[in-house]
Every structure is written in structure tokens, then in C-alpha cells.
Amino acid sequence: MRIDILSLFPEMFDGPFANSIIKRAMDRSLVSIYVNNFRNYACDRHKVVDDSPYGGGAGMVLKPEPIFEAVEDLVGRPYVKNPQRPVILLSPQGRLFTQKIARELAGFDNLIFICGHYEGIDERISRHLVTDEISIGDYVLSGGEPAAIVMVDAIVRLIPGVIDCLSVSDDSFSQGLLEYPQYTRPRIYRGLEVPDILLSGNHAEIEKWRRKEALKRTISRRPDLLESAVLTQEEREMLEEIKGSE
Ligand code: ADE
Image (cartoon, rainbow, N blue to C red; front, side, top):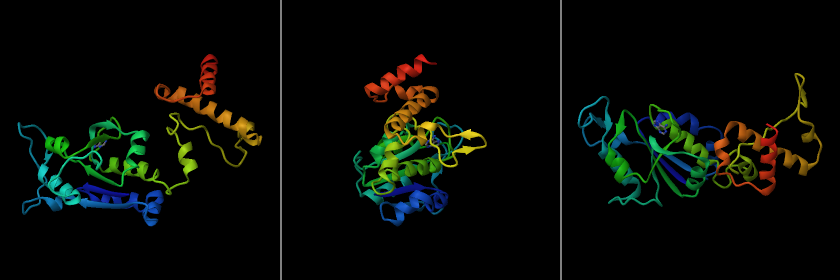
């Protein structure tokens, strides 16, 4: 996969992309990431990328030309919007990023991310250039860069070969539920014991306990997830049992 990120602050990506899973994926050539400063595409001598809003109001708005030019340089001219060639704008106005969207995006060979800044971005960018506008949560960041880092991390770890596929399928959300509790050595720490079932060696029972704990955790922390989770008959019975014992 190739990822291009358009940002006015390319240095913000140095740390996050030089460590851990993303670095490993790049070292193994499973992903290439290019961060481009779209200020380089500004058409005037002073490299201006923003201007005051038409109609008045506070703050500055990102101009369309540098961002259109930067995208066209990547995908070719004349630009034709194509959802099969995602151009993603990070913005609090976008649809909410989820594990499902991360899975969808992990299936593409090329992704372009545009990081907005300042008060806003010229609407012609959102309407005519961008194929998808995504928010990482209902809060306002000072720019799209942290959001792009979050999305790239969530997507890259799903690329086949980046991490062990069994651990991906165990992740929270991958089955529509939160993850079950995990324990490791020591068995007793400060008097706090690991549940006996995990030491029993009975894999079927351990599996059942984990599913039940995942359900319990989801009910108490994120009941909204249960509305769309696909549950087996056994899980539905567990759910009734848990609800009955509350
Ligand atoms: N830019 C500013 N806030 C954002 C958010 N919540 N998600 C994505 N991009 C943003």
C-alpha cells in the first residue's frame, strides 16, 4: 500500500512513523508513506495557503488551489473524483472513524489524506476533490495531523503480514464487542489473583469465559455496540444470563 499525506506540518509525522508497527511495516515494504507539504503548491511568491473567509468571520480558510494541485500531482490531471481512489479529508465534520472503516481502507492500494488546519477549508475541496471526509471523534483538534496518524496506525496494522492475524481477529471491535480481560505472570500480584479458569488448561471453558467477559464488558461500557454485534445463539443466551444477574 502507498499512503500520501498532505500537510502543512510534515514534521509532526516523524516520531509516530519512525517507531513500532508502522516502522516495521515500512521496513518490510508492506507500506510506503510519503508526507508532502502542500505549501509547496501555493501559486504566489509568499507561498500563501490560507485567506480570510468570504462573507466575513473569524479565522482563516485554506485556499483550494494548493490542495487541488497537490492531489492532481499524485493522481493525474484532469482530476476525476473516484471513490476507488480514496482522497480523505480529516475534519470534525466527517463521518466517524471506526474499525469497520479501517478494514475497508486497508483493502486499497493507494490512500491520500488531506490534513486541514485553521478555521476551515474551502468547501470546493470537500465537495469536488475529496471522496471521503472522516472525523476521529466528536472533539476539535487544531489540525488533521493527529487524526491522520491515528487512522494510518489503525489501517496499517490490518495490512496482511504486518502483525499476526490471530491477534488482529481478537482485537476489540473485530467481532463487534470489546476485548476480554487479559492476564499474565505473576499469578498473584499484591494479593490480586488471576482467575482460576485461565490456569485450568481447559481451552473450551477458557474460550467460553472469555466470550462471556467480553459481553459483560461491552454491556457495561459500550452497550451501543451490542445493537450491531452479530452474536451466536450461545452468546445471546449468555447475554440474557448476564442481564438477569445484574
Ligand atoms: N481535525 C480537527 N478535528 C478533527 C477530528 N476530530 N477528526 C479529524 N480531523 C480533525
